[in-house]
Amino acid sequence: MTELLLVADDSEDLRRIFQAALANAGYAVVTARNGAEALRLARETLPSLVLLDLAMPVVDGIGVIEELKRSERTASIPIVAVTGYDVVTEELRKLGFLGVLRKPVSPRFLVEAVERARAAAASGNGWIELRARAPGGAIARVRPLDARAWDRIRERLARMLGKAKN
Image (cartoon, rainbow, N blue to C red):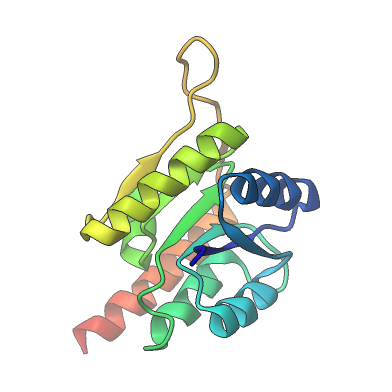
C-alpha cells in the first residue's frame, strides 16, 4: 500500500512542487491550503506523515498541531513543521512536532527529509533537524520569526505546560 502524506501550506506553488516530488518518489499526497483544511484532511485520511507550514491562514500550524495532538485518533500522526522562519526547535518539540524542515527546500532534499522523518517516527526517535544545505555546503538562510508569532508560540506553550501540571 502506498503511504499517504499530507502537505499543508498556503503557497500553491510550494504545494504543487511538494506534491509532484513526493508523488514521483511513490507517495500518495493530499494537500491543504490552510490550517482548517489540514485539520479536516488529517482527520479524514489519517496520513502517515504531515508536512505542516507554521504560518497559514484560518488556523496556523501551531493551532493545527494542538488540535491533532488532543485527539486520540490523530495524536500519533508524525508532524514535521515546514517554515522559512528561524524558530527555536525546543519550543516546536514541546508542541509535539517530530522535526522542522526549513525552507527553501529542493525536491530532492524534500524526499530525503520525508524518508528521514518516517524512519525517525518508526524508530521512536523524538526529534530530527531537517536543514537543507545550499550549493557549497552553506546552510540555507531563513527569515527570523516575528515577535507576534513568538508571543503566540510562548502563550500556547504556557497553556499546554500549565495543563500538564494540573
